[in-house]
Image 1: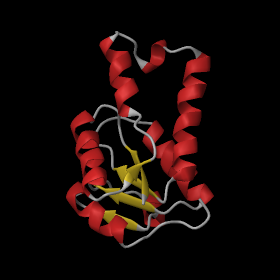
Image 2: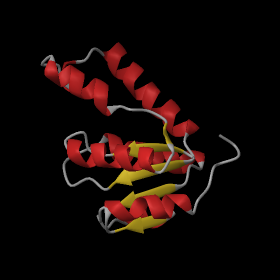
Image 3: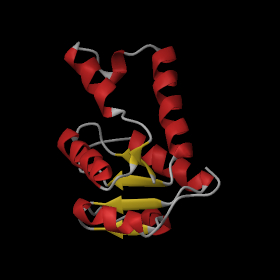
Length: 135
């Protein structure tokens, strides 16, 4: 199974835990967006400091990884994010199954395949979906 994890970049520990759960389940992460983000921050470069070309490159890498995923796992943001919600809409639009964990009631979450209160429950739900044949 190929998994893309969408989340607020401000929730590093949750993202790391999700990445670990993906690996522990024997699945493949389609894109590790956290490592380059943290490397940029270590150099004092925030997203808002990136050139437009760099922003486009990062965004395209994320969208390509979502298109290759069997499942989009959304860590329902507790911190401000725009990207995770955009990624969720993109996944829905191209037919990638969506699992949302961590609560966060929303009208649009009714479109997800599974909505779970706890991140720890997501791997079990993801396992019920299975690989996409069209990816």
